[in-house]
Amino acid sequence: QSVLTQPPSVSGAPGQRVTVSCTGSSSNIGAGYDVHWYQQVPGTAPKLLIYGSTNRPSGVPDRFSGSKSGTSASLAITGLRPEDEADYYCQSSDSSLSRVVFGGGTKLTVL
Amino acid sequence: EVQLLESGGGLVQPGGSLRLSCTASGFTFNAYTMSWVRQAPGKGLEWVSAVSGSGGSTFYADSVEGRFTISRDNSKTTVNLQMNSLRAEDTAVYYCAKDYYYDSSGYQNPVSFNYWGQGTLVTVSS
Image (cartoon, rainbow over all chains, first blue to last red; front, side, top):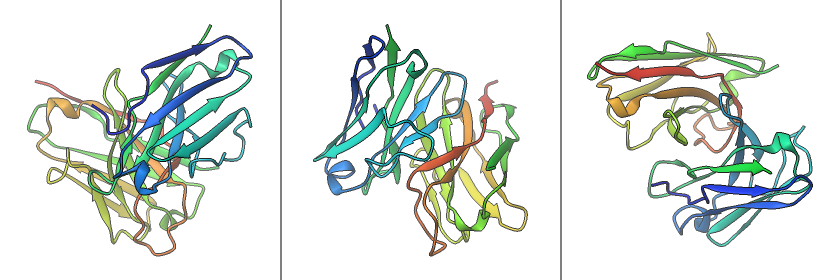
């Protein structure tokens, strides 16, 4: 059971918009800690997509965006492409548990 | 170009020990907290441990506290993870990861990870 809760899977057709939710608690996201998002293609290392809840590292397309409110955060992907098919993980910090916590991951299928 | 290269993985019996190493290049090594993150087969990501830029602060997940020890050698740009009393549930790919944020104090907590190694597989089995 992960500290941060994500849906196991989401799907969308090419060109559509999908969102991935990440729900935490008052000891992590709700405590003001930033949320970070990673994309992992199976068999490869994770890649940082969003840092500081809303910021994109250099090279990440603006089709990817992050938001945070209260004890939750979301990753939005617009203009879905086949190459977006991957696992997506949210990550934050927690004041009462291990210092870094991950969500359980969400598998995105591009139909 | 930032590069992180892990080594030291392998097959070990329950109760045994293993030492992982990560050799870094392409950035000012002593200015960043470094972490180990693992992924059990078919499972999600789990943060394991971190060491601050100076090496003066170390951080551990509850699941490994007291069994694993992280260290770094800034002169050799390496970070190590000594794993003792290994259990079957420690079986995973172990990734070395660089923190995104600059460690100005030398004692910064891990925050987020902008570069990852390719991973090294640790299998704990009899």
